[in-house]
Length: 72
Image (cartoon, rainbow, N blue to C red; front, side, top):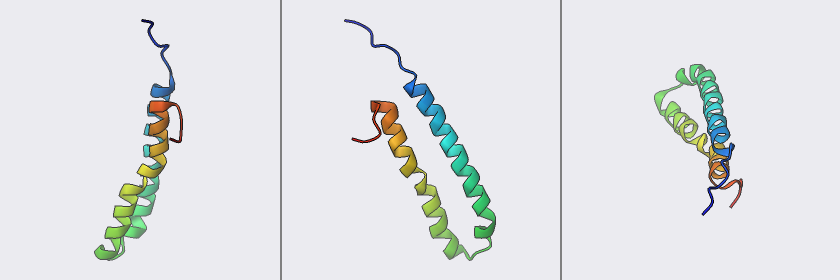
């Protein structure tokens, strides 16, 4: 049995994912000041959406890290 050739796809993909989350966090922090001035019941759906929204661009990246393809 032969060993599979190591790939840089996983380490590169993880670094890219960390950068994506860091950039997304900076955007969320930039939005925080105007949103924090709103009523709490208005803030809640905004923070819920921002808390979940990062998953959608990360999902194809994680799929690529695991399979080498962006789509199924």
